Image: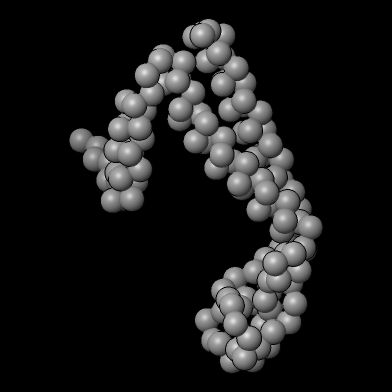
Length: 127
């Protein structure tokens, strides 16, 4: 016998999805609802991946507040800063550009797949 264990957050997400999809009133809305949520997540991941490639490094919150770190200005500029400045501080880490580009391509393919599924919902359930 195989037992699948889901985390509390996964169960919460599944139950929230079930409740919200039940609120979708038309068959088309029920078809599109999970896809729209998934598409929003993929778009967010694409933006994050594009930003990583643009910067050439990733930023992680500091674990030790002392010393030279990096802060993000409102215009997304990354500048050196110390613990004397307000706001979150980060450390820079190099990225594997080739792996990040492959990830971005996979995300773009996933976005196209979701958009095609949304179009199929529109064909299957015209309003």
